[in-house]
Image 1: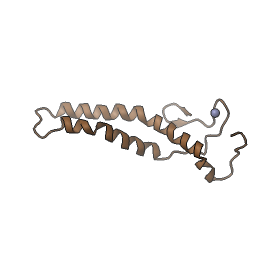
Image 2: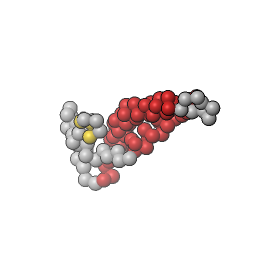
Image 3: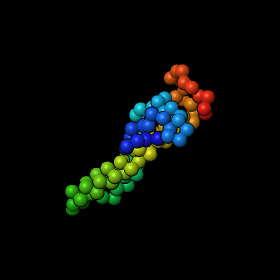
Image 4: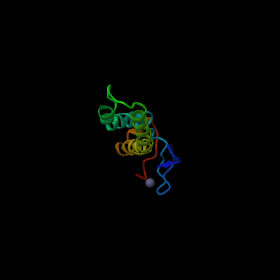
Length: 102
Ligand SMILES: [Zn+2]
């Protein structure tokens, strides 16, 4: 579905399905923030305490965790949203589109 990190292909290389109408917009970013936020929130409770002796260590750990998880999850969320738009045919609402090959 994607070429490079996040750029959608113009068409499926296998069946030629037009991917133009499968615009995920801000959906993948929203879902990634929601998921990563919930995944790292226990780290705040465990490490980011007011009485913590070290603050730089926990900060770097949590920031690194957020960065790695976000970079891993974002392109997969984009594929998930594009697939859901394709499966629900929500992209068809945008207008004339040839669905004869579906
Ligand atoms: Zn295909």
